[in-house]
Image (cartoon, rainbow, N blue to C red):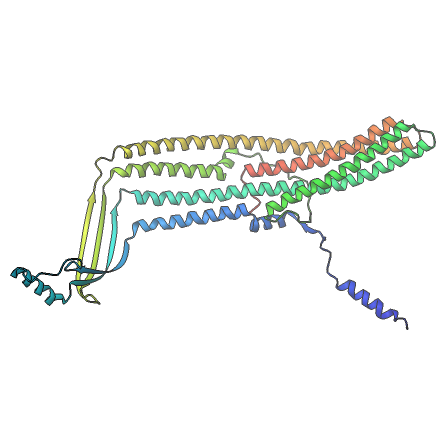
Length: 447
């Protein structure tokens, strides 16, 4: 059998490789802006809050129906028996008057029953309901405003959850990169100590300690990879995705400095939590007015127009209207206590507003100071790392030349490794503090 030519085979394999689909394990790179857009479209808590807002709008529009008449069409059919079908046959000895009545019924209807058809329209209009309808309209208008602030607050919460998940995931990725470098560093240290140990310049204890340092680096790297899986699952949850997605984040853990001294009163007055409490207070005040309206009279107008007849289509027309006036004199005291209950709820809403505002002012002060402290801490950690790195570089040369003992060199190496971890952790903590501060001052990532 003749061998196959090589050029067609090479062309076949080249085409197969080029046309094969990309690997399913390819990483999707996401920036914070991409995550914000994804969460805005798919986060279930945010979508639920938007539906609550739409519901409040529909309830407000529905309240206008109290000022409009209620109109209904009706049609009826009624069969009336002139003589019971279960009665005995009339005796031939009946009185003359009964005979005359029977003949009259038969002559009018021709049967022991009669039909009646009717069609018409009814209309009812409330003219005055003690201002309840007006107060309800105002209350539902305030409820829409509360829903707007509730939606804003939900966006703040989801923005913080998104920022927290993004920062934790990005921190895990950067930590893995750092721990891989630390693992390589520990491996080089072990090889250097092993070389001295085999040459008789180091004892076995120092060699075992360097090997333990390598094992610790490997363990921390594996732990960081597992934490990355957890953080990716949390980020997927905030984005509205199922856990298990594989993607890589792009960004930096560098918080932005706050240059201006904030005015906490101004920030608190525009925060959705405080605005929501203000609108709730107004709703509670309207509830008192609505309860007091139970002592006012009610005035209603009703109108009905119909056509009735014994045959279909009915032609005999009739019309009537009525005007009703009702004034409550005594209802067992429930109206009085309804007023007292709503007055109590109104006073309670005032205290709730005070409590929420005081708590927010405290949170603003605490989060701002924490953000400043952690931002300044980064500068200190950077300075320590710079000094530790220089000292470690010098110590490595000294140990390689036999000018430094292993114990001192190992302390310096462990110190610079810990300084690297501390700086990365400090950057993460400062970034988280930045978004806590933004959440408390009402700055949302989600538009």
